[in-house]
Length: 248
Length: 272
Image (tube, rainbow over all chains, first blue to last red; front, side):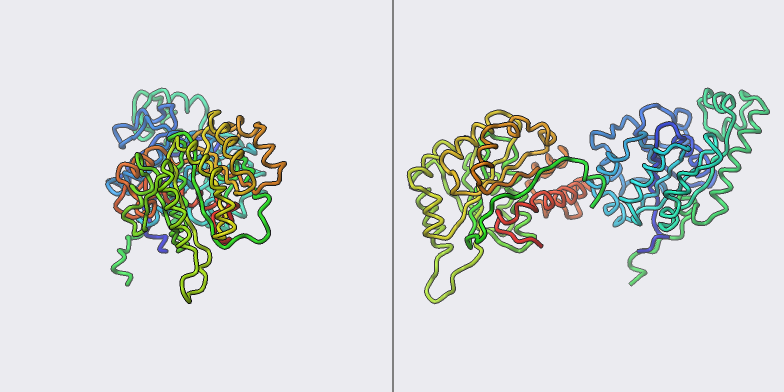
């Protein structure tokens, strides 16, 4: 298999309130800045992507428990995007894996040139480690993994380092970090209901806050852009797809 | 294999299988109620037979709603019709069976013949009488070396238990039992009526050969798609269908194969 040629379905998973939507929003902004088209399937019902509807095609009103994941598969041949982003509801990891198994998700994607990357922000909590373990045990090398240590929770991720980091690296997975953004700054940005990129330049936000936001985004983006593997896993950089005819 | 599928409690264990099974197997799929998943199970089994290249003889006994024929009529399988509410037709059916498994001329005795019959809903009363009158299963066993498996597909309703009681009253230990709980109607725990029933305890206590399995659920939209287009499961897995249906069918047949694993001897199949 030519991993390098895959287009990416990026599934944000993990515990509730660890930063799944935040990471996806940052990624949307970055992909947009690189002129990479993406679509978003939102299974999390909290309308976190309000400001992003003008940036990206958002498919919401989806019910994860009613087999709506099938929508992704059925769209896949017509979808006009290089990256598909999926925001999963928090915590339902077993159920998600069951869905993946039941609809032969990885295989059906693979034969059409797509591969899944799990984008999983983690806090210091043990649950995060357990979820990640569960996902890796099931998906093994059929998917790629990017773990985001969310520094807003802690500086140290002892359980993660001890229990899963080795397995993660063996599977070619990568860890990055998401800096802490002061709570009040985060809230102020969130309440604007606009994309981060836009908030960064909006006079509605204090200048100081804007500079915090700018640095916070920059730190995240740099990690994605400076590492070929991360940028491949997150659909930012992909090697040209080799058509089957050219192989033989 | 996966953590994802290991969560459901299933006690699918085969008990009481005789040590030297007979060479041939008649599999009768019943379920008195319409819509319990009888046809789905029959089609699942057919799929598995075909995958393993174990071509069975198939009898369609459901004239009003010939499901198996509808889906597998064009699959190259020879599907014969019979009528379990007509004594003459039933006699014919037995004679056909005899031909199918008997020695002809110098040819060696055929081995491992498999016969699948899908009974129509609401036909049990007549069929049960026929079993009694003919002592059907002993006859099949003694004369034709055919052991019968009664597959009983369950939904959650009480009728299913009643039906099993009636079946057991006429068939007793002359057949093997495969109880199929259709997951579409709920989880294992939802089959409380059967799980707690006296007939279940009795059948186990009296040392019958019995196997309980759970038939996996196929998501509704995929089921409807396959139904509408009258596809075999093999066809539904081919490109050209809705991608989700293709994937769901692959997933379902895989789960189905796993589900019937403990019951393979009762279906005339061997463990891989």
